[in-house]
Image (cartoon, rainbow, N blue to C red; front, side, top):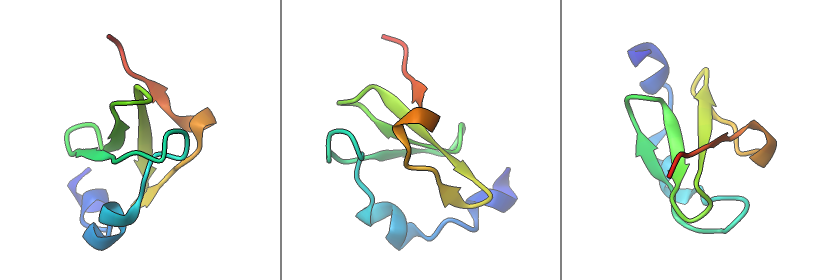
Length: 62
């Protein structure tokens, strides 16, 4: 997994926002996801590419 993390451009992560809420995202290094607390969704990062589709996001548990 560390191999994929190194492929994510940190500048890109700073620019991305949640497509649903347009709010900030936090990076969960352990799960390799971008997390939107407001939307309660986690967007996966696959092969170094953030998948910013609500249909691909994982719902966060309360």
